[in-house]
Image (cartoon, rainbow, N blue to C red; front, side, top):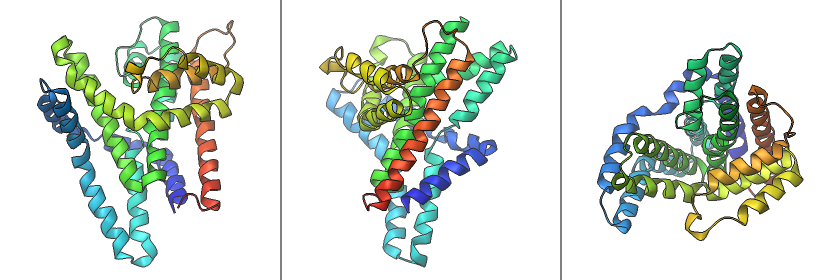
Length: 299
């Protein structure tokens, strides 16, 4: 059932791109802002508890509905299946990565500088470099990282815990995105503590998916280069950054898997190549999940 729900949700995501704005879930912003305010100037343990509570409260309605539909056992679990597809569709994103990358490449090729900067900022979640070459490399890296936050993390938690898991990961990422946005606005060091806690919470959720994403990139691209980058990066990681290295590791392994020649000119082709790597990795994940379903390891 999870495999069918996953395939349908991924297909609908591509078909309903004109409705993607509904998945941005901006009505959570005030709630997250309130949570960040409650976490500020608290002891570390209290900030952690508040952060976990803020994360779990929006998941509670999904838990109640999912459990109710599972225990009802009507219509061969069709209502639960449809609910799972709907939750998964809203958990993927908040925007279609492929459509966003295509829009970015077209804006660059058409010399629409301001539009390309806007899209790059959305992908990077910070101001994009204005230099052409540096921006393309940054966006390439962002595509690889956003794939884990928008797709692979959600898929992993969906397979492991059903729609409840998928929604939990999406709320965690939305909370992180809001914290990053607020951190950009408030540069004062004394205001940084709640944002760090939120990023740590997301780091815990994304730790396993990030490493499975790295494995997928290695299988979908240059395996030897990706493995070499993985090992090299691991040698320079300190214990204090244990839950903070997910994005950096995914970017390093993904870029190595692309195996771009040193003499190749940096252009939008680099960004398109990153998206193709992500697409191949999605196919690998779906194939593995299908095999797990066949052998009864996923339901």
